[in-house]
Image (tube, rainbow, N blue to C red; front, side, top):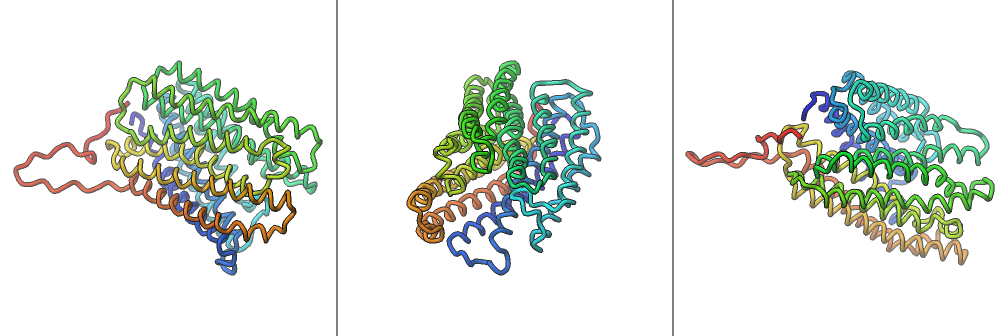
Length: 456
């Protein structure tokens, strides 16, 4: 680790992992409600569990992005973070806002807009924290070296923060409300977050593979161009049935079809960089997570997104379990796995140790990824049956849900595998095994706990 202020990333990673644990555990409870609908109905109704599950997901991913930025920007800019104090204050504001939102949800105090349920004071706190972050990292980059990675990362983070302003706009007209709502929800995850993902992935692969920076930057700019080209007008696939003009059905269908391209390019980029790489980096777990993130993102966000994005298909399938299948695999591949890749790469450097518990870390990857893939398959089958029975045959919603119970049981089992994998990941990343007792007179070999990893 070359710069002292890279240590700012450490508390961000810890807070992100804590919220990650909350997210998957609450998700497991919510998944059981599908099997036993009255479970915890009087204590924590399903809509409260769902809010906690989705909000914890969004906040811990953002904390991971912020931590990644504080880790990579000093190295890319070749200077320390402009104001470490501001970075820690930002973290406190975010965590206080998160805890405040959870308490508010428990007392049925929320905004009512899906994913944007936070009370007004929490939304303002998030905005203040975002502004502090942008000032901090922008000043750092402006005073240091400029690279394609920092340029794309800053573009993504600035757009991400500016789009948050639409979370405060809540017109009475329902169609306008949903249009502005999608400005945040869609343009975050299918435009600006893709820029953040591409820049973080480029940084990790640059360090792990040793490929020339010029090659990485060319790929990065192509990925960014396709992400923005497809993602902005691709918002139209959410405008099909909310009262907007009919031309959005064609615009949404055409441009959202192109949204597969940046994810295919990111997957190709990751594998080509590893193939061209000439560095045998010791952190094999970080490499596995990086390749896994780009691959699962392509299938989750690209392939499963395309399955129901055309308006002729979406007319029947929107709002079914097919949507849930796409959402789970897309978020896991594109953003969850990417953050875990960054954590796996950064933590040994932050703690000045060689990578440790890599076998357990890689086992957690296969457990989480396998569980999430099985969950996606079960939800896809459930959604297909639901679409036919409910939307084509016109059967009663609750009767259809009763017929899907076997799929919800399998979905819960796969969710349990994801939770076990997540807890195993945290153990592998945070818990260092004690040194074995050395017999008197025996030599003490170098230990992964005491040998610092060489600076890159």
